[in-house]
Length: 219
Ligand code: DX5
Ligand code: ZN
Image 1 (tube, rainbow, N blue to C red):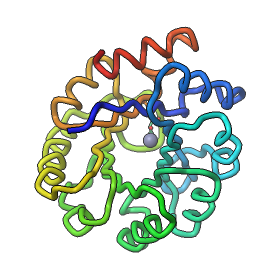
Image 2 (tube, rainbow, N blue to C red; image 1 turned 60 degrees about the horizontal axis):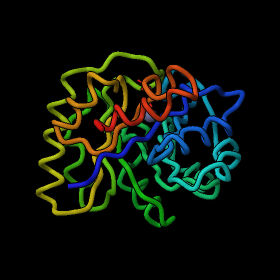
Image 3 (cartoon, protein in one colour; image 1 turned 90 degrees about the horizontal axis):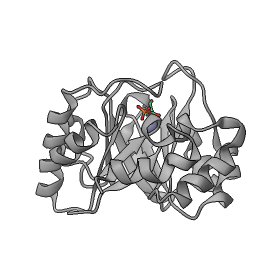
C-alpha cells in the first residue's frame, strides 16, 4: 500500500500571508496542499476561488489538492485546472451529474476525486470506482475547520479501503476533518493513506509546522 501523505488545509493558515504559509508548510515537509473552496451556498461559508489558487501556484511545486464545495461545480472545473490545481475533488450532492464531473476532470488531465459527506454512503461510489483517482471521506460536515472527528466515518473508511483493494486500481483514500494526533492513527488503521489537517498543522505557528506534520504522519 501507499505511504501516508499529509495535505495541510490552508483554511487554518493566516489568509493575509497565504503565499508565505504555503512555503512554510512545503518546507515543513507536507506532501500536498489542500485548498478548501466554499461558495456560501453548497456550504455555509465562503473562502477562495481560482484567482487565489493561481496566485499560490508559484509558491510550491507540490500538488495542489483542491476540494470543491461549490454548486453547481462543472462550470468552474476548467478555471481551477487552468489556475494550477493538480487534484480536483467534487461532491456528488453538488451536482448535477457526478459521473460527468469526473469525466470532465479526467479530460483536463487532472486527478479526479469524489468526496463523501458524513451522511453519504460508500455505495455512492459503486459506478464511479473505475474512473476515480481519489476518494475523500469527510469526517466532519463540510464548511468549517476546527470541528470534531465523527467516529462513524471510520467504518466508511474501512468499506472504501475494501472497495479500492478489490478494484485493483491505484486510488488514494483521503480523510478530512478533525484529524489530529489522536484521530490520525485511527484513520490510518481504518485504511486512509492521505490525511487532511488544518488546525493540527497550523497550530503553534510556523516554527511548529514540521513537528506537527511529522506527528500526524506517525513518524
Ligand atoms: C472542512 C474542510 C476541511 C477543514 C479541516 O469543510 O474541508 O479541509 O479545513 O479542518 P480541520 O483539520 O481543522 O478539521
Ligand atoms: Zn477540505
